Every structure is written in C-alpha cells, then in structure tokens.
Length: 128
Image (cartoon, rainbow, N blue to C red; front, side):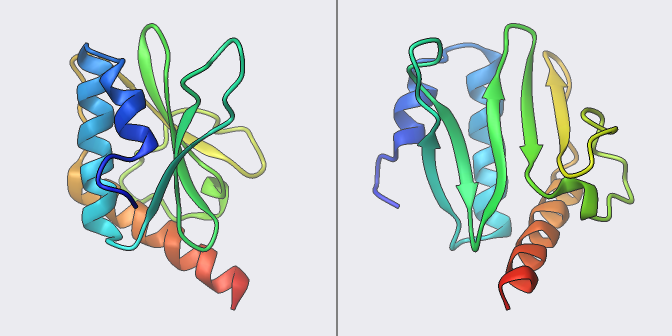
C-alpha cells in the first residue's frame, strides 16, 4: 500500500462523521490484518470516488458511505461467526452480510477486529 492510498483520496472528500468513521474502520482493519491491501474499486459516473475495499486472499470487506450511514459489507459474511451480532444489515442474503453504522453510533473495536481476522481465515482457507 502506498503512503497515500486511493482510499486516502476518497476519505479526504468526506469531511463529516462518515469520513471519520471510515478512517476509524480502516485503522481497525489494519490492526487486525497488517498485510491487508486497500484500494478503491467500482468507480462509475454516479460514484466517481469508488468504494474503499480491503482485500487479503480475496475481499474482506468494503466501506460505502450513504447520506445517513456507513455500510461495511463483508463479501463472505454469511459464512462468518458473529457472536457479538455486529452484522445488522443484509441478513437475508446467502453470501454477504453488512454492518450499518449511523451518526452517533460506534462499532465494538475488538469484535470488529475479530470479524476481520475470521474473514481473513475464511479467505485463506478457501484458497488453501
């Protein structure tokens, strides 16, 4: 990862609580997986900044901003153990699961890092 990643540029354009939350999330992801690769994917005219994406042997999660929330989508979330019930969105899907964070809310740092480590182990297990 470069000193200033594509996600740095994306986050610089979000000057409110959503940018601060994504910055906190990316720090937690890096703590849980120092070898994570961070990039921006899926740029399009309706979303020229794209979507921050964290990968290691596959996608761990993405971080999208909406008017009223930050959505963290785990590509293989349905197969992950979530004992602290962080997943609160996309619960009916067969593959993905998401965490929606609204202004004033926070995420349990240790539980989130455990979820990132589990997603990594799942990715490595599928490739191994």
